[in-house]
Length: 390
Image 1: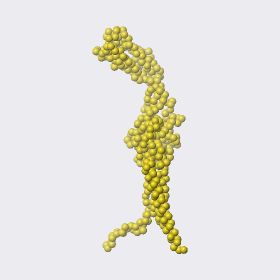
Image 2: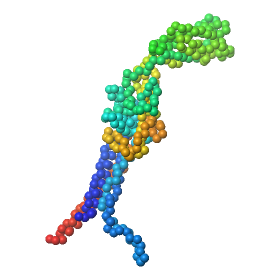
Image 3: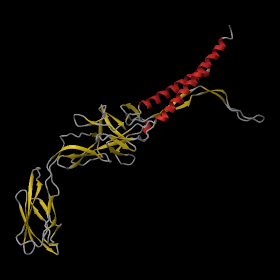
Image 4: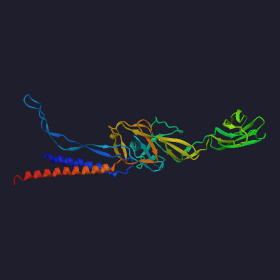
């Protein structure tokens, strides 16, 4: 049979594969985190009809004569170029700016994806639309150990920020030096004990001939007394008060005439708070916002990278699995060397270029037509041979 017939068949197969790849790219033009693929062709083995010969004493050399036997698909390569960003406003949507993959786990297998659309399940875990659980490092008392093993990240609304006792009361403002002797200035400061119960630190400032007497009554009834002296409005004697484990800082108090605007507020301490929401830091930290007004790190998202990302195998669900040629997974946090940063409330769009894909469709279609013409022409030649004897 004619070699051209089989060359045409191989061309049909190769260009059909190109059409399949291009069609899949176009179908996923709106798939978050999708990476387009390109088809690469190479020729097959060529039949040698005449070998090469070196030059002789009385004749020159000759080149080899070979007839090609068709084409085959050499590779289907994934393009991991960055896709455009799409703002969603959902805290659970995340985008990687730069290199790296989210790490998810499903059925005991680690998967890697660029699609950052996650939701909470009934356990408070961040999961992908197909149920794969986002992996990272949970925080312990607000501290994240990125050197430890990764696990699922759960942000339950039952998560509590522990109560903390007030340890410092800050004061500022002015005690009037021209006030009458015996004048009292009182300030009640809201504070918290170790159980998160609201208490009060009562401050009293009494004018004397030499300056001001200070007294404080702590949450547990403890008391402390002292004095404040001023020269030209600047404090020159007296200092802080320590009462019931609370330090009252008086260093910012002045003593000029005419103004009485002393203020006092607790610098720390809070009741126990319930998780109300979270924000995503550029380094992948999940920072919880609690009902008591405090913020605390709840965990950190892990990112993965590979020496040869093109060696990853697509596993469906916009995810990939590692292969022998992708290299070992390299885990790290956003912002580490070789890894991008994270943006919350944003998704990465598909990197499919429609103009390029439609051009590829035309190229693949014309290539398919040309190879089909090879087959019909070869068939006509065979028909002519069949008609030699009638």
